[in-house]
Image 1: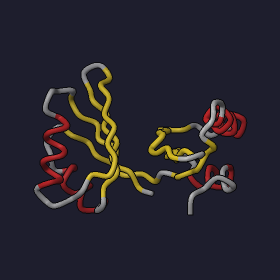
Image 2: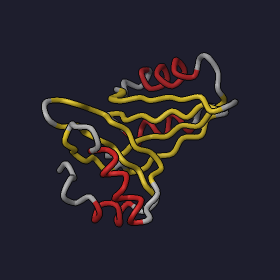
Image 3: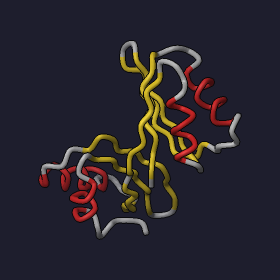
Image 4: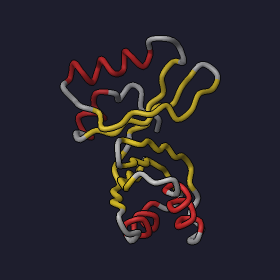
Length: 131
């Protein structure tokens, strides 16, 4: 799964600006998380048309957009499952750029993980990957 990461100045209209720019081109947002970090905002989103969305977001002034691969894994929905996953990465020496719980249902949770070492991470969690 690909995800877009957008770094911008933190202002009250950032989500409106991003979502309207994508809506103007009929690009659907599947998932969006935004967080203020001091004077900046970091917004991570998944969309139905990544390449088009990346082009659009890169053209918005004072906004930096990049796309990266995210690994989707399925975990048991129980206390400690996320800690066990994080420990795998720690023990393997693989830093996670981002980790998000993107869905919960029944007995499982779906987690998206982005790392700088995607191939190593894929091998590390091959037993958990959602195909």
